[in-house]
Amino acid sequence: MADTAPLSTGTDGVEGGVGLTALLVAAARAIETHRPDSLAQDVYAEHFVLGAQASAHWPVRLEQAPGGDTNPLWGRFARYFGLRTRVLDDFLLRSVRAAGIRQAVLLGAGLDARAFRLDWPCDCVIFEIDRDGVLAYKHQVLDALSAEPGAVRVPVGVDLRADWAGALTAAGFDPATPTVWLVEGLLFYLPRAAETALIDTVDRLSAPGSALAYEVKLEKDLTAYRDSPLYTSTRRQLGIDLLGLFSLEPRPDSAARLTGRGWTASVHTPFDFTHRHGRGPLPEENDALAGNRWVFADRTGPA
Ligand SMILES: C[S@@+](CC[C@H](N)C(=O)[O-])C[C@H]1O[C@@H](n2cnc3c(N)ncnc32)[C@H](O)[C@@H]1O
View 1 (cartoon, protein in one colour):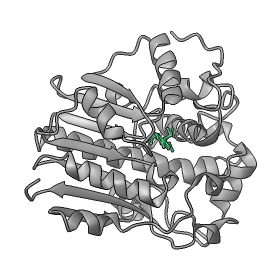
View 2 (tube, helix red, strand yellow):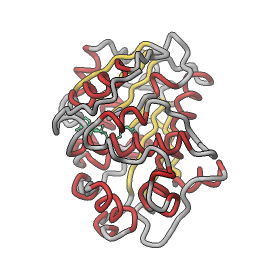
View 3 (spheres, protein in one colour):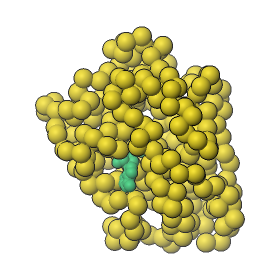
């Protein structure tokens, strides 16, 4: 069992800046795990939260959050992350089971423990890209738990604003084999040019039969939601100003870019999946989630 003393990894890791958002998602997954109507199970999530100084006092169960389900952060926003986790778990498992893909890349993997908690075919290789400090913290926690991945797991510490394709290839990634790519909770933090470069790189490295899921925000002006319950409660309860971390540049139309290069793409609101699963967030007034879209794309055409 883990040594539960909080670990400090500095602002390059999870203790500050954008790395802190990885802890936010982990806390949401911990809460989702303990819900009686849970959509996704992540037994590692609460260890990430309780092991870091910045989050050791955060709730990991809904009953620890003031107001429970009515708390905009730990109720509705956490449920959003729980639903997203479930939908993207299903996407990955469908890709390896039904489509037979054997190579996965998690971009901005953060504290995503899918390599450890999903039932992967054992001949899968899973690459996890994030910054060194975030991956170092992840490894400290998982090592302390003696966690074992269910497939071959290859962490790649690199900044996604730099030439990450070289680091991925050097780590053993094979562009000739179909890949399932996951870009969950990442693109909002990247400048417009970095998103376009990332999509182009995914396209270039994707053999026919590859699949991609990513999340975007469609709003032209994210700051219009500065006073929304969701952003306000995240600022007040955690001191995290998400709008201060997001890139506020106009976003590129990455789905159209992929379609122009031989991919088929389908674009969904999170609320589509709330209806599909019978639980999850619903639209509300002044809703910071209104522009969120989950995009699923397949490379059907030639690479
Ligand atoms: C909100 S977290 C999401 C983590 C994970 N995908 C999940 O859903 O649990 C965003 C992650 O993106 C990573 N990230 C943001 N900008 C990055 C960059 N330029 N290079 C590498 N990773 C980055 C952060 O370190 C963080 O782990």
